Image 1: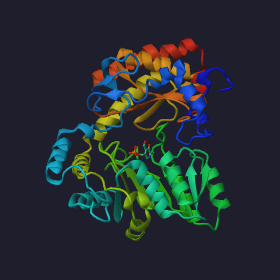
Image 2: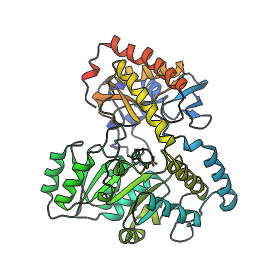
Image 3: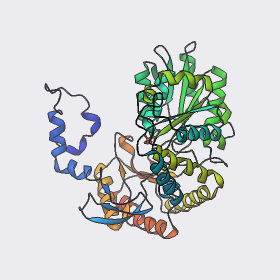
Image 4: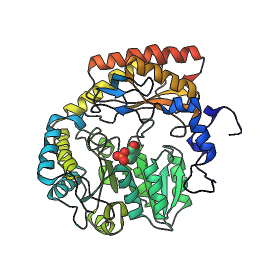
Length: 430
Ligand SMILES: Cc1ncc(COP(=O)(O)O)c(C=O)c1O
């Protein structure tokens, strides 16, 4: 660390490791982690939940080491399905019949009738011919892209694409080409530049750090014009967008134009795992080549039992979605009235952009937590250094009292703190 200020560094600076012992972390990384300012920032991470990820729950605070009741604006339990009583009963029923583990890869011995039923339900839900279930959302993206793309192919991805998508491309041996976020001119230029190659366009339904939507109709028009299919990651949009909850494909009325529809099961679904839906021929082929599928244990049947119930609940009516959107509107209106910068959020993911001061970001996060609000800081390199932020994950479970309490804390700490700081935070681009 040539520069003496530890907070000027981030995880982006220590990936290169030249320590002679391959089992040792880089010495400068160890020194950085031991610095009191860095320790203080890391106290926000790996904080322990002492109860379920509900809207109102208990944590062991990293800020003061105490057991604290908090209003939770950070978990991905968007529809409350992770803690829904019917889902939990279904998990108990499944665990009694099938045990905890699938105890094998899907190809060999890990497939139960529950897995088959759930995969069929998902394929039908997404209006595709077939579905593959993965035991993690991350693994689903890695396995899907690695299973589809080959050396010599080109993946043309929005620059804000998730790490799992990027890692899938690396593993596939295909070339990764990014286009500027939601910039259709740049997407078209990249499609043109790689004409003649097998190309896949990779976009997300809702961008996870910003909460804005993909311009799917425009992407679909370019997909058709250039003959490059669309891979759509609906991690933050499935069960929430569209009248039937099928995602942004349904929201825009063009789900049939999406080649592969990806989803995670850890967010709105309330469980864990990932899935892709697509045409039967491709998925038959991928069963032989998507390593995260065929070289990894199938999802726990207990979780799959719960997920079947979660999908039933989320699709039997729109009540959870309606509540989520009512909460989201109420919250955003108040944040906007407070004069906070929420970027271009069009969803239940709402950033509050603070700017480039890591110190201020962590200081205010600590103050919010001590006042009873769990709203985690998002630091560089997860987001651009100039646009450090808090990221709200709205939930249908939050009551009006929870929302008002959270808003009052945000107003007292963040709105006032930012005004006092003199930072021109309203002009910061996400
Ligand atoms: C856009 C996107 N895709 C994929 C994933 C991976 O999902 P999981 O956390 O379930 O592994 C995430 C997780 O944050 C995500 O935000």
